[in-house]
Image (cartoon, rainbow, N blue to C red):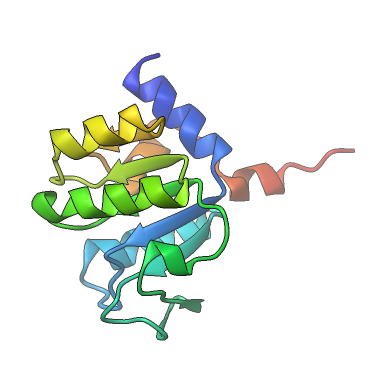
Length: 148
């Protein structure tokens, strides 16, 4: 399976995304991506221990992936490359289906651990770029389809 076909399948199948490194600052990429994913119809759970209990786009921020308390299809990681490994390990522990390391977040060792644990991995890409580029049908698109 090519990277692009895997990304298309992953983003069409997934519904719940944990966004690690969520920011409440509009100038930050994680803030904009969180808003885009919500507009696209995904359930997005912001994760940031410094903002736990606050809201971003009306979504309550949790401190850790373990605090989510429901299945997570995808963990989208906005952390420095070195720190992303800890988040990947946490994603493995909670049984996430996939991890997505954002643009510039490159950690081959963490990628290998995730793949060995059976998770799909996307690295050094952004769903806000890939969804329109690959013309991926999001949950919002799928909900807009009216069946007669």
